[in-house]
Image (tube, rainbow, N blue to C red; front, side, top):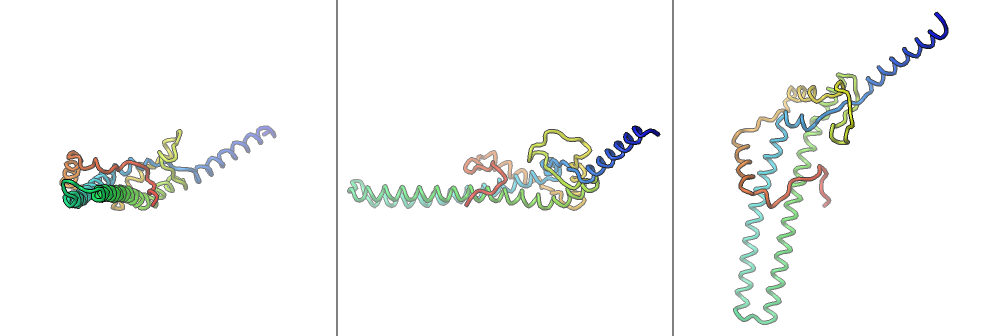
Length: 208
């Protein structure tokens, strides 16, 4: 064998060894949204948030009714021909009640957003060891979510979505959502109870 052939053989061997090493310490890709759908977690989060949102709206409506009654009492106390002092009192009361109601409304929105973040993070923490186990079965040590950060392209061999879903089901993570819960949530949503509070947004908790 010539020196040239020996060098070529050595280069090929080195390349194969490096490829195997890269595969061993490589990156796995996980479509966590697909896993959440398969496990029923996505529907459970939706139902829980809609229910919580409905409760918050009902509480806000009761608060609004109470504040309106307070406003009516102040206006009645001022009489049909209020003095300048009475008018100022009515105006100040109206402003104070509006500020307080808006504060409570914003707090309700923040509570809902924080609960959404909590539920998503709780699911991710529970799924983390399962996904890592699925990755290690393919000789991979790092797991990236398919959507965050954006993945330009990848080989199907490093996609662990199906394996992670299977392991998560075996670990008892599948959520069985009752038809009653789903129907109630749909009824609340159709009734427009979700108009008051916006649930969309990032998975980062809002600032206090």
